Amino acid sequence: MLTARPDPADLPVRPARPAGALVESPLQLLCTVEAHAAGLGGAPTRIHVRDDVPALDTALEAVRGFGLPDDLETDLAGRRAALSARDPVWLVGDAFSGLFQATALLRCGVERVVLVDDGLATLDLARRLAASEPLVRMRAETGGPRRQLGAAAARRLRRLAADGRVTLFTALPWSPRSARSSRPRASPSCATTSRGSRAPPWATPRPSPPW
Image 1: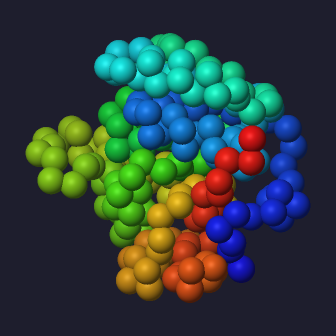
Image 2: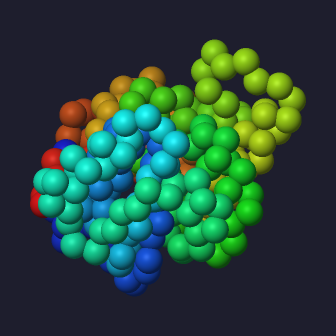
Image 3: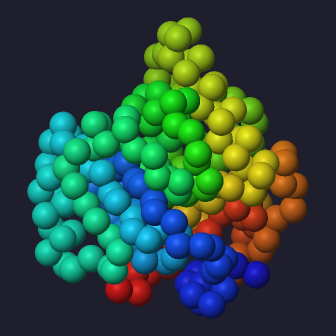
């Protein structure tokens, strides 16, 4: 049974491994901090915030002002850090991002991926992964090369998911229809949430920050 706020004792026990995160919006930043606080990050978790997104530096300063959880580090070097990071645990704010997808094909040694909330795009991401579709944004006009990149990134994530190494960290409600369309083919069973909807077993309800 998944709960709205899982008990820390129920979270999977994993060896302390460093984690890296690429965030490209204020929402992704907040959700990444929450995922780390819920025990899905690393020791430490390094959040790389893109330095070329308007107002994202201001959002970072605001989040820092609240006080960050233990073992959480931040920097404004998102693009450069994403291309050179080698952390075994990877928190991803936008799996539709061209920067993420290009990086996904270059990185080796990834042990675990955590996909954090990015608004309603999270539902489309889960559906596309389950349906073996390229990771391209809804209604976006994409050419052949961009769709090929999205398809390659989707294959990488599905291979990791087949090994139980992908977690979707979300606060979004999962309706029965969503559950059917987002059920990973490599993991056909589903868990029931506290709201009575059905969620993929790799989807973790996002709790209120415990910090």
